[in-house]
Length: 134
Image 1 (cartoon, rainbow, N blue to C red):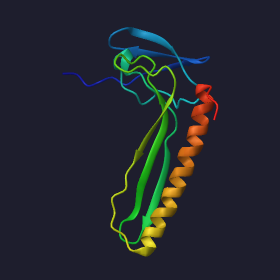
Image 2 (cartoon, helix red, strand yellow):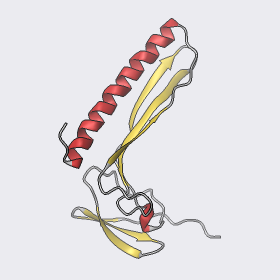
Image 3 (cartoon, helix red, strand yellow):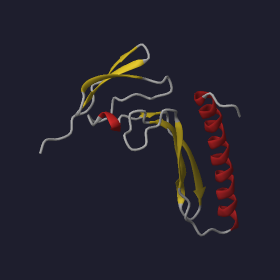
């Protein structure tokens, strides 16, 4: 079995040319917020996903050190077969599992407030991209 090939995207004015396993070379619209496809593997057209920059929040505690508690990004899979995403969505991953004393608990609540503020800003951007009122 051969190793998967990496994409060799060719960017043009608001489009990108990608290789697919099922449709060969395709030209798809490329949203301005997409970080690109340079590290993507060649897959099926339905697997082509546009992803924005990663939004993060960390907490620093005496017991656990620095821990990432939030990763989020704007994403869109317009060619999906099971659940196509004609408009961008916000993918959010929160991860907190800790037993803390007061000082570390306060650090955690500050980090959660920062995470909430970052999610709110991303949602404002998402509403703009989707043409929705806030």
